[in-house]
Amino acid sequence: MRAFLDMGGYWPYVWPAYAVTLAVMALNIIWARRLLERSRKEALRRLAIGGTEK
Amino acid sequence: MAWTWFHRLASPPHVYRVARRLTPWLAWPAAVLIIAGLIGGLVLAPPDYQQGDGYRIIYVHAPSAWMSLLVYATMAVAAGIGLIWRMKVAHAVAAASAPIGASFTFAALVTGSLWGAPMWGTYWQWDPRLTSELILLFLYLGYMGLRSAFDDLQRADRVSAVLAVVGVVNVPIIHYSVVWWNSLHQPPSLMYLGKPTMPPSMFVPLLVMLVGFTLFYGALLLVRLRGEVLSRERAASWVREAVRP
Image (cartoon, rainbow over all chains, first blue to last red):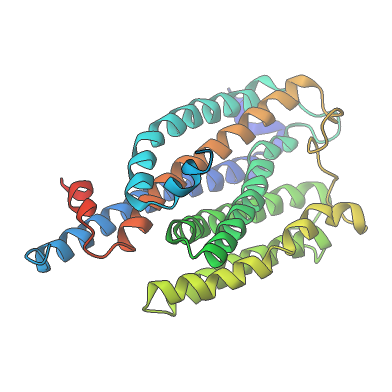
């Protein structure tokens, strides 16, 4: 396990590289969901305002 | 008719419905492949005879770099279709792609830098491959900045689409930069079919990661596309159905 974490001495490069990539992936999931949620709320608000026109 | 599928792609309610239904079919395989690729790359693949365990950065660097190009190409094609056929859905695809592409370009640059430090002895070098990839990041950011400068979504779509289409010349430049010019960067590892430069135990996890990342882009795109399509619809009756909690 220690050897695995050490990555042959390259741990200061390997682990940050994986951390950055996984963080970018996680952020993308959060951003995508947030965009959809925001658009839905906006659409609901528009429908509430213009609810009588159609 | 053979062309009905193309016309239905232009229909926002149809796209919204299909995107919703398709998302889990891309997201779950993406999750499985990425986890398998991580195990394959970090645990199962043997160390490199020259770079030891340091080369394992390839399993996040190459897929991120692949995404940066794939997403840009998709964005440019979608923007072009949007310009030519005035198709709202195509503009929505382009707009939905940009933040994904920008973030993976950032990941490609950072992971490449972390790989360069121990192997080349420098985090950064004004090398053709590195510089053209940095320009790609600026193209994405320019595209997003340009979009946000317009209040009118349709104008934002059209003006930013021109930038996306013009910027696509950078994609082949990035890909061939390691061939055309003397570069610190190594040549592509497996982009040429038939002769992978690695043994299968190293190569298969990389392939799994590339497919996983591509499916992940598909899933992200479908979720973002639904948001982009909704915000382009004004009081359409289908929206009432779609957004019902």
